[in-house]
Length: 234
Image (cartoon, rainbow, N blue to C red; front, side, top):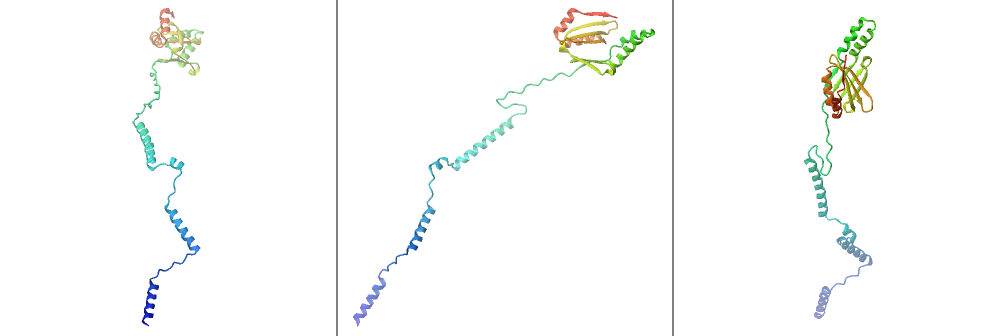
C-alpha cells in the first residue's frame, strides 16, 4: 500500500513538472501574424530616393541661401534708387540733352508809323485832290501798327489792322533804307526766299536801324554799313 501511494505521488509530480506541448497554429492565424510583421517592418523602413531625385533635391540650407541672394538683390537695387539723386541718370546711361532757354523777348518799339506822314497830306486838303491822300495817311495812323523786338519785326495793316506780316532776323539777307526829312524813314528788307518786306515812316529812324543792325547777321550789317544805301527823301 505504501508503495502504491508513493508511485502515485511520483506520477503526479512528474506530470505537473513535465513541459507542455504547444499546439500548431492554424494557417489563418499564421497568415495574420505574417501580415502584421510585414506591416510593422514596412512602417519603419524608409524608402531610398532615386538617383535623379537625389540630384534634383534641394536642401533647406540651399533654399535659404537662394532666398537670401534674391532679397539682397532687391535691397541693393532699392538702395541704389534711394541713393540716386533727382535729375541724375543711372550709371551707364547717356546724360539727358541740355535744354537751351531763349532770352525773353525785348520790345524796342510798338506803335503806329511816325505822325509826320500826315503833315503834307493834311495841308493838301486845301485842294480837292489832297482829300484822298490825307484820308489814307490818317487811316494808316489808325490801323497800321509796327512791332520791333529782338526776335522779329511785325506789321499789322489793312482795314481794322487785321492783316499781319512778320519776319525774323535770320531770314534777312540785305537791307536798304531811305531817310526822310523829319527824322523818320523807310526800310526794305530782302529775304532769303526772294520776298521783300517794306516799312514806311519808321519813327526814330536812326535809333531803330541801329537796333535792327544788332539783330541781323554780321555779314548783312557789314554790307549795309559799307554800301551806305541811305537816300534822303522829303
